[in-house]
Length: 281
Image (cartoon, rainbow, N blue to C red):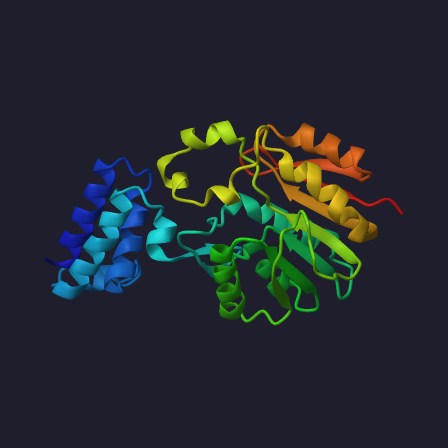
């Protein structure tokens, strides 16, 4: 088959399976399977694709048609302009989480040598993006899952982040010694347990540990504050990603825990996405 025929067949099969972005995914799979990116595709479209590359693409397509997330199939994904390795056992970085990174960067814009803890760090997309944007910062990336921790360590090395300290830690009962922090940031599990079975098929491939926020989805928001606010300096920032519709509940929890100037920030889709506040002076 030529690259053009292979691309068309891939796109049609994705469309038949109901993929929302079949054309984009076909290009991504063509690049991963055959080493041909979208820019160079027109130059070689009508030349024959080697059989070995065709077979590799078909295996990737088989996984995608089976419902596996495109990010897992590719083994990597971009977040905040940086590349991250992803796969089974780790939460996929999502564009809406970039608001959490921007919130911390805005807060720390005029600070030097800022100290940040990223709780439930997963792939490390938040911690590493902050560290890359602020090379003077010291960032602690805490993750309990051994599977996710493996990706976190690889991503810190991939992005050459010498200022990220990766730790296997239960963030609800931390055992390590930490300095007084300038900012605490977290994208914790926040989906109510009863909603997990109804999530779209691709999300079912992601680890339940990174999704399940207990009965009402608020377990981590209730428990993180009492554990970590004492480790935050007066005037320090706490910022959480939240699920749609959780803004006011998480805001109330943070205020009850002693945070001041608590705000709910919306993402580009107009949904509540981040709750942030500061420790009173």
